[in-house]
Length: 164
Image (cartoon, rainbow, N blue to C red; front, side, top):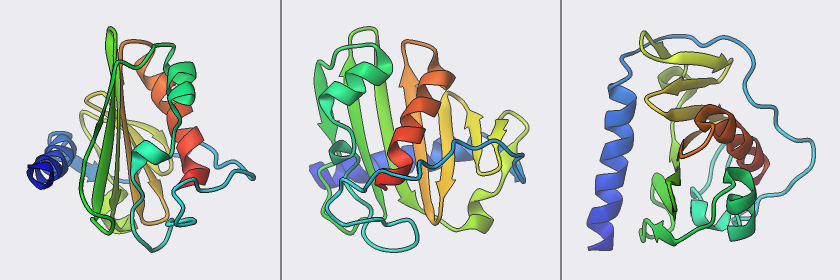
């Protein structure tokens, strides 16, 4: 059952990107990577290679609450085995939610934006409520609902970058 949930989540990530009509390179202004900060996954940085970490391990409950301004009512994990190419975590919140998807990609496959998407940086774009950020060969997809969605997504992506 958990395996099929992970497959469905991976499919949703692909559909969300496909729905944006990916088409051309993005402009500058991606979230800055902090000079300090360490990966919390236990794997070390997977920016260029290695197993994608469980996103649920990258942010504490207190951090999610502070970054979104909402308490957490439930956490949904992907339940897939280490080594999968796509991972996700969803934090359910009163009046909103936070989802983080991590997947392996290439710069060529990522460096696109869409007619519907809004460039928010050299390696970042906003589309259909998702902030997509390329970090080495990892695509970080942050979806937040219930506050100032783009601003919240940027804060969360900035917090995640040095931990991936």
